[in-house]
Image (cartoon, rainbow, N blue to C red; front, side, top):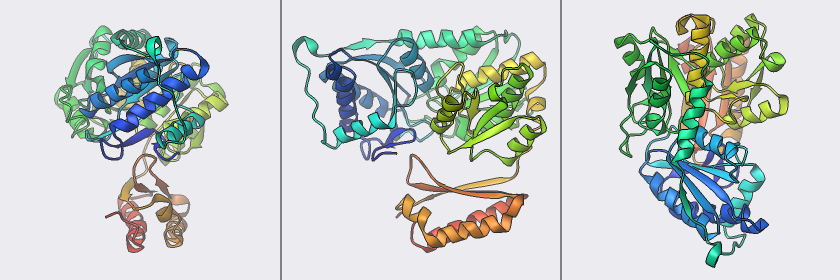
Length: 449
């Protein structure tokens, strides 16, 4: 991670630690780097979610790009995976998504994607940061070299068509609930399910610039659980603000996490001889219950650091075909280079229809260990993580749990937060040991004011 960019882009509160000048400079550098630097006119595609500040950042990025001689193609409100897809298939030099994903409306972020729709490489990110800090000079374009903006809503429509083409089955008569989180899926997800014949029921699809992720979507899935049960739906899907993740709800109202999805679709791929290397890629946050279920059906697994970026890097290196996170970031490498919530929905629908089984039955073999995860806002993540007394507290808990559980303490990639997670036989045991470590973090004065 660099000075400004974390594991999922440059993220922060709008006009505080991420402001319009940052955005303009990012546009200035990218427009020159992919254009005038190599004697060509750069083409950059831009999407945004429904936050009010996304308009400001969109125009700032476009200003910077055009000033450096690039053409900015604007997809307007759309999803992160749609920008990834269009960057890849429509021959763009790079893509930019304006979103803070599942964060509240007052936060925002700038995610950079390369021409393959993958997250931008660290070397280029560091150059962007050097320009922001004034270490690199970039010339202004002049006369006929100045860039322009192009309305590219057609790219979003093309992506919708691509999603529809992904389904092998008609969804006719299947009752599907969608929680759009008042985010970028509000104008896309229903169109896809309707086109495939589903009886689609939608909640939280009325964005006003301030209600994205507010008591809705994948971070507040209890509302979709109630909605599915009350309306006797067959299944429900909840997205986050930029739709790179998806959690599901079965017909009984139970949550189907990303770990369940890895099991359900991994098993489906194995049964059809499609599971390359006989492996799924997980992160260290996946639950013991997933590994036990995979062991039972003879599927192997790899563990990466938290972040779909690291999952994808593993998949590229090894050729593994499915991977993801418990939070709902699932990557199907045959079809996408990033997590795609709507695509994940379609793949779960595919298994349900192919097997002619309800989602509750498909997910049943994954029995979760109780897990408690608490976030602690700290002054310095490295100082808190590397404090000898904190490390001792962690090792003491690990020793006490033995083979009956585990503890994981890690830094957030996007916030000044330390995450403390324990899995054990009972919820009370998890709470006890998580609090035991957090008490040491507090006692050593690491909490932020």
